[in-house]
Image (cartoon, rainbow, N blue to C red):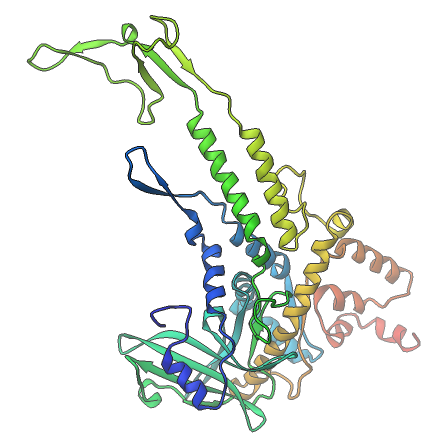
Length: 467
């Protein structure tokens, strides 16, 4: 994309300014730093020291990849089991089929992981329009590709995405801008190669494509954390920004555990009298028979006064792994606490795992609150994106979707917040008592619209009239 992959190329910046947009405050330095922790490639892991030979050496610290673990856990907790529904039956059926066939929620889960790592991510509609018809896909972008164009406290209404593409067998820069024009969203595409703009017609690209949709054709993904690093910025903050110190302690303790185990393993020293010899070569000299492995677990005992003369000597110092492990456990607790999981989530010696809200509500209230906060931050934008997806599919692909279909709502699996099994049992009891109609069970737990649920439970229609 540029000499620095975390910066936007000059050609793209100039195009954005030419269209009258101001570039958002620069967050590329923070994004690059977060990406280094996420991948485990930051400079902190390169440890430099002076060796006994007087030369400078370096080694790489071991890492459990705590930053990636944190982001992967959040993505799994939020998006592992989710769905989407609308009160328009045909749109609901089409949307369910599209999400299953395209793996949209898997894509969303990966996008959440990257967004929580680098503070910001995005998903946007991508149109492939041909003479024979059109197809729509959803693509995801990470923070270094996202350039908000118009934003305020309520969110981002126009956005650009800068990516690398191949044009004519060479690397090129592509800028796709999702902008409002005449009340509908347009996708404007520009491509540059070697600093020169390429003609869209030669690439088979529609430079200005009118989606005919009034709902945003993209959504930004960010954790529910206030950006205290840059005021008035549309970008978010990494979920582990406040836990960098805890991650350093964690990986330092992990490296120390390895060093302690590796350096303090028992070795056996044997006197020369116990080492077999053999005659080798034509010079008549004797040489010791090779013994031990490449890690040198056996050594020759010279006349240094160690041990009793003529007897093997075992060197087995006491390890300090217990005290190091305590530091490691404390770092795990701090990591979980600073990243919003609660201090017990990453404890290495805690029994069992998270099951249901009934089991964990007392000890993990912070986790449950933060899951809800993140869901609220992510669900609104994703719902709008799915609404525009269904509308654009109706307009450009001939999808069987009602015109003016109801907005799409994202349905989360809240079994970690609420005890889903207990709620099911309670509703079944209320249905048996005649308090709640059966179709509400299908609507709440199976993601069906009210009309679909009533259609599957027609015997309830008469009962509901006087209810």
